[in-house]
Amino acid sequence: MKQLLLQYLKLFLLLGLSRVTTEHVPKYDVLASLGTLPLDGHFSFHDLPAAARDFGNLSSFPPVAVLHPGSVADIARTVRHVFLMGEHSTLTVAARGHGHSLYGQSQAAGGIVIRMESLQSVKMQVHPGASPYVDASGGELWINVLNKTLKYGLAPKSWTDYLHLTVGGTLSNAGVSGQTFRHGPQISNVNELEIVTGRGDIITCSPEQNSDLFHAALGGLGQFGIITRARIALEPAPQMVRWIRVLYLDFMSFTEDQEMLISAEKTFDYIEGFVSINRTGILNNWRSSFNPQDPERASQFETDRKVLFCLEMTKNFNPEEADIMEQEIHALLSQLRYTPPSLFHTDVTYMEFLDRVHSSEIKLRAKGLWEVPHPWLNLIIPRSTVHTFAKQVFGKILEDNNNGPILLYPVNKSRWDNRTSVVLPDEEVFYLVGFLPSAIGPHSIKRTLNLNNQIIEFSNKASIGVKQYLPNYSTEPEWKAHYGARWDAFQQRKNTYDPLAILAPGQRIFQKTPVSLPLSS
Picture 1: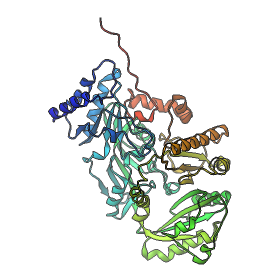
Picture 2: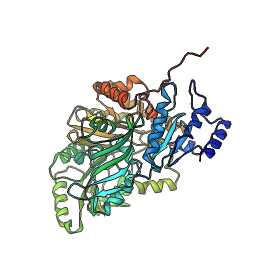
Picture 3: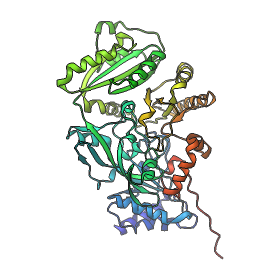
Picture 4: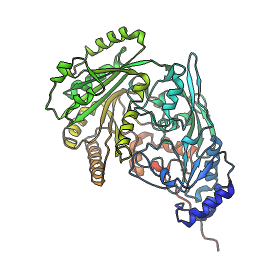
C-alpha cells in the first residue's frame, strides 16, 4: 500500500498537480508523509477534480489528496498528522459529504478532502423504546436513515427538503424544512455526537457531556470538528400523507395564515410557503400530480397577478384514521383565506412525500439540468421586517428576473437551541427565505449573482436584520457582522477546538496563515 502511494505521489508531482504551499516543508515530503499513516482506508489522487466540485458548481479548488476513511480513527490520524505539522504548514482538511455546498465550502484548496460517504465503520443502529433513537455515521445519507428507521415504524422528527445529504453535513448547518416550526431544525433533535476535533482528538459529546463542543459543532459550519457519528431522536412514523397546495393573491393573508398555523395547537405536520413570480399555467402544472378539490372551479381560475403565493401543507395519517384526518383538515382549511379554486391535494406514502425532490432530480438529470450552477441565496428574516423585504424584493428587484423556486415560511425561535452556533434574529417568529435558481451560461450566472447582491444591499440599507443561512462571506469583518455579539465566543471556540485553523477552510472564516521562520545560516 505504501509503495503504491509513493508511486502515485511521484506521478502526481511530475504532472505538476500539487497545490500544497508550505514555506519550509518540500511538497514531496508533505505528501509522502501521508504514506506513513496506518490507515484502514486509503488516500487517492485520481479523483481530485471531483473533490473540487459541489452542487453550487461555481467554485473549484482542487486538494492534493482525498482520504477515503475506513474508520473514524483514519480521520483522527489524518487530522492529528496535519496538526502535528504545526503552524508552519498551510495544509488544511475539509470533510465532504454529498458535496451539496454552494460556494466551495466543502473544498480544501491544496489540502486534504475527506470523503465522508466512505466511512462505513459506523454501522447504523436503531434503538426502539420509550425514547427511540438511531446512531448513524456522519457520512450517512438521510434517505438511508429514513429507510432504516422505517423498518421499525420510526423516523427522525425533522427533515430537510432534500434527503440525499449527509447527516454530518446538515447538522453542521442546521437542517430546515416544513417540520421546523414544530420540531425545530435537525440540530434540535440530536442527543449525542462523536467528533474529531482540529487537534485530531475523538470526543463523544452531548448536552450533559462535553456540552460546549456539542453545541459548538451543531450549526458550527465544520469549524470545531468533523461529525463522525450522530444520535438522532426518532418518533413513530405515519404510513400516509395528505399533501395540499393552495394559492394566495396577497402577501398579507399568505403570511398571517402561515403564522396562525405554526402557532396553533392542532395544525398541519408540514408547512412551507412559496413565492411564484411571472409563472403562467401554475395550476396546469399542479394537475399533473395533484387533484383539485373542485375540478370545474379550478379550471376557471385565472389571474393576471405577476406574483402569487403558494402554501404547501401536509397532514400525516394511517389508513384507519382517514376519517379523522379529513375532519381535521376541513377544520383547518376553513380558517384560511386562500383562493378557493386553487385547492389541490393528493395522498402519498410518507416516504414518497419526504423524498419528493429526488423525483424531480431524476427528471432534471435526464435533461442535463441538474449539474448546472446554483447561485442560491438563503436568508433568515425577522417577522417585523418581512413585509418591507417582500415589497421591494418580489415587487421590484425580482419583478422580471425570477428563474427558480422561492421558499418563504415562518418558524418559531423557541424550537431552536440558542446554545448552538447558529445565528438567529432576536424575535420569536422569523422567516426562512430561499432563492433557489439554476443558472445556465455565464450571462445567467452573472445576472443571478447580481440579483443576489441587490437583495443583500437593499436588506442592509433598509435595516431588515437579515442573517444568511448557509452563509457565504469572504472577509473577517463580514463574518464579525454576521455573528455580532457572538463573534468572540465563536472565535474562542475555534481557538479551543481547532487552534491552527485546519478544518473547513472553504468556509473562509478563519485563514490558516503559516508562521515564517528565519532562514538558517
